[in-house]
Image 1 (cartoon, rainbow, N blue to C red):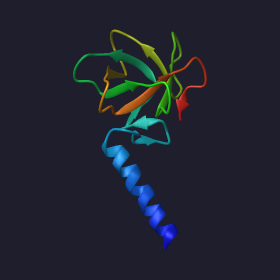
Image 2 (image 1 turned 90 degrees about the vertical axis):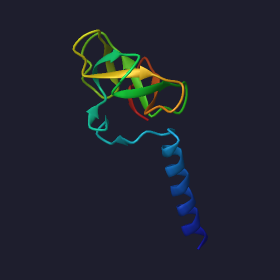
Image 3 (image 1 turned 180 degrees about the horizontal axis):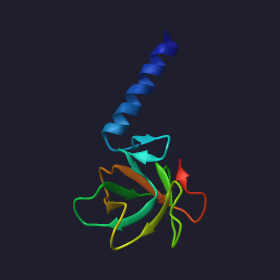
Amino acid sequence: MLIGGLNTLAALALASANAQGHGADLAPDCTFNGQALHGRVKVVTSFPDIRVQMVTSFPDLRVQWVDSFPNACGRWREVDSFPDFTIQYVTSFPDLRVQAVESFPGLR
């Protein structure tokens, strides 16, 4: 009985964290809502594809900003035109919590 109750409690805590914007709904193939999380990225101030909060610990995704070959999970190249997706930096209610890294980008 105690183990079943703990599993239920853990599931409720996870659901609550996701509802509050803590912990993104990332797919194991490094996508968010069908959008691959690599490629050419444009930073916008309104109507983004993904709302991003920059963090220094416990990220959903580790991102490496690159100048070329943004072809792997978490490798992003900032562009002004023809982006694969757009992001907006926010301080609350993010879709995705991101940590900038120099190496080993990808899912947590």
